[in-house]
Length: 124
Image (spheres, rainbow, N blue to C red):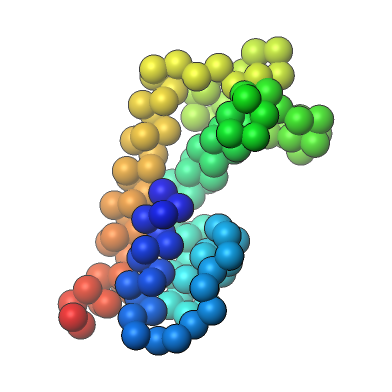
């Protein structure tokens, strides 16, 4: 997802020389500032953000939540996806993995249909 959105930003920037984005927060800010594409306003954003929380728990904690993640309600936030949480850990099932995959696909489709993205595609 992140690679796709970064590629979209580069495509929208075109020949313009701009500072490269350094991480997800930079990419989302650049899309909003330079192209009026607010990822947070796209349908499915909350669920996509929850998918990122699942991914981060797996990638950075081998599925276990940190004390800070528990304090900030991350386990509660990912339950909207149907991802089970047991003993402070994410439990990945085939169904929850499929759900996260579907959310990513739906978000990409919504992003591709964003008026600013569509407008850019027609200008080429």
